[in-house]
Image (cartoon, rainbow, N blue to C red; front, side):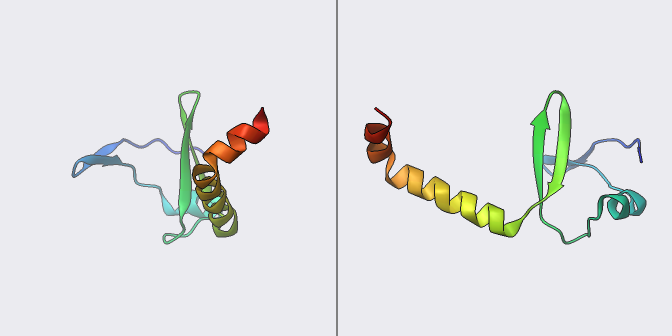
Length: 75
């Protein structure tokens, strides 16, 4: 399904309105958390997997905390 819409100013940010039919087609609900990526001139919106997000956050904390150790192991 393809929908044409315009980007609108919302305070100091920008936003778009996603029609109900498109949300249903993508399996998204109004309160779902999503990840938005920019790639090749496109925005890609995917539902956030909370388990994955938590694991990635833990991994980033680990990498930040053990930065020097990881660099030494990489040599």
